Amino acid sequence: MRTFLRRSIAVLVLSAVAALAAIVVNGSLSAFARDAKTRRAAPSLVTQGRSVFRYDTFGDQAFWGGALQLHKAVEGAKLGGVGTGVSPKTALAAGLKVDAAKIPPKVAGAIKAGKVNLDDPATTVTLLKLNAVVGVKGYFDSSGRHLTSMGITCAFCHSTVDSSFAPGIGKRLDGWPNRDLNVGAIVSLAPNLKPVTSLLGVDDATVKKVLASWGPGKFDAELFMDGKAFRPDGKPAATLIPPAYGLAGVNLHTYTGWGSVPYWNAFVANLEMHGIGNFFDPRLDDAKRFPVAAKAGFGHVHHPVDLITPKLPALHAYQLSLRAPAAPRGSFDPAAAARGKVVFDGAGKCASCHMAPVFTEPGWNLHTPGQICIDSFQAERSPTGMYRTTPLRGLAQRSKGGYYHDGRFATLGAVVDHYQSCMSLGLSTRQTSDLVQYLKSL
Image 1 (cartoon, rainbow, N blue to C red):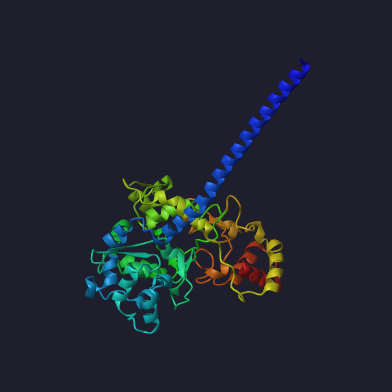
Image 2 (cartoon, rainbow, N blue to C red):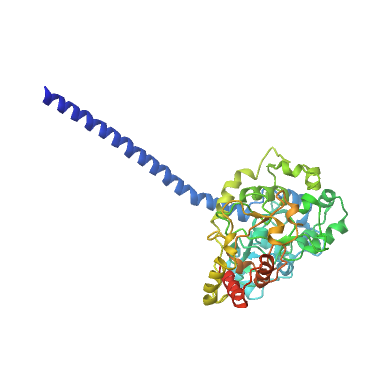
């Protein structure tokens, strides 16, 4: 009897162990299958996001083409538009870039041989038809010969090229700020600026004066919020176009921390690119701080068809995949940079805010104007009233136009000198020089 009981208990225990093992194995396999599916989906999301970043206008052609009629200025009167048109040389001079990968080999050969007229707006129209103008998308009639509209994409401001084919023509560099792009000059070409003048409550001449003040590599995202075109000292209120790379792990985006990366994507797609989507931010109801936005209802944008929101996850994934570029060879002194890292982590007190590897604070990465010893003008144009600790990776690739949000410091040396004074660092000339070399190496 005892033997029978022992055998029965043993069978029950083995059965239970087997069942438990099956549950664990099946659960693990199920979890593994789910993880594998997630891993397969992640690259797909990034790929989708790249397409959105490069080519999706979010329906903003209704504004840039339909309202401003910018495509007519591109074509010129000879092609059915208005004015002299925009030739490739004119477009390149305004900082627009051309994706060499979109140019057919025969056309590329003809360009190199000087057989393509780069002074002819018709050539620009052809490049648009090839989808080769970075960040600009043309829409054509059924014949494929005449532009009917045009729109812009994220890449318009946040991509450039390596100029490997010719100056302004080459392989795409997504996420790099286009510091050659003269946004103001391009917008000024629009035959109909009424949508802008009506929003701001000013005339054409005033709008064109403001646009002309920006210059290459700058844009004023807050103009449509508060209507402030110039700082109290008379200088333009526009800020440098920021990079879209190196944002993984960074909390608040933009110079004054309006919100996270997906927040700013939604903000720009709806309120700056003028795409067709939905957007919510009741902070923009503050008529004292954001009189233009409050009057226009920018804090509560609703469209029956939303061409923006469904694309935000993929766009976010792609942006977070964009790593900051390494410093070019020969652009810094390695030995001095190694010494500079010691200064950065120690006497320079840089690492107290710019914490590796993200080189900003993990968490709430904002500071008051007083903490960094600068004026509050740009900070007060945001809901935060503060300035973000800028991630430092890829500094060498965004030196054009200067440093800080408005380029007020022409060199990294000037930035270090500012903090020397602000924080009474007491660094020697050698330490300052070494610190600059380390910053260049990031």
